[in-house]
Image 1 (tube, rainbow, N blue to C red):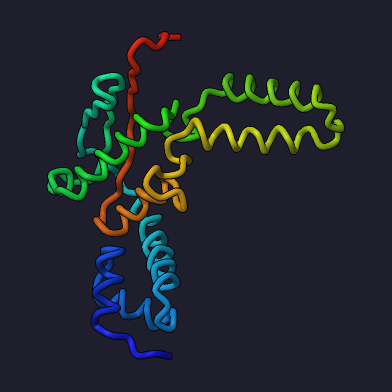
Image 2: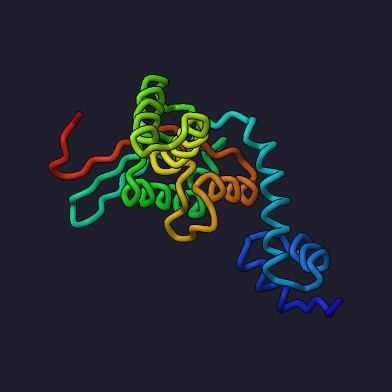
Length: 201
């Protein structure tokens, strides 16, 4: 194993926001490989974040974001556990990133749990009809429907969308990483997106 230098620890810390000791431990576990050390920290952080996600989040921010010279507007409510965290620059930056994501990618729901049952049934019926019209054998149609429904969730649900600045992670990953760094549960409660001239149906 190569020597783990202070510079390597510093670079990993800047990239991940993890503590010095955690960065050193990650580099040691990864034999000095920077990318593997990042993965190690992400996995460790996400495990910690999962525990924090059970805690109640009632503080936070409602933020507005206007894009495209006033053509798209977003209002989003993101909650955390304490007013102290809600006032930090890191939390404000996260909320702004989420608002930009909503403006750019136009999700319809926060998560798949919010998609109404009738919407899911409608989508399934549509995919089934499409698959049969494409001449797909009946026995694989259910698999095709399930695959297309997953694609629908990935496009329609904010938490499942690829993050606009880094498509190697989802918005859910982005929030879990923030939970691991900040140490509080963070929840996207709701959002509204308006586009100039779009119909209201």
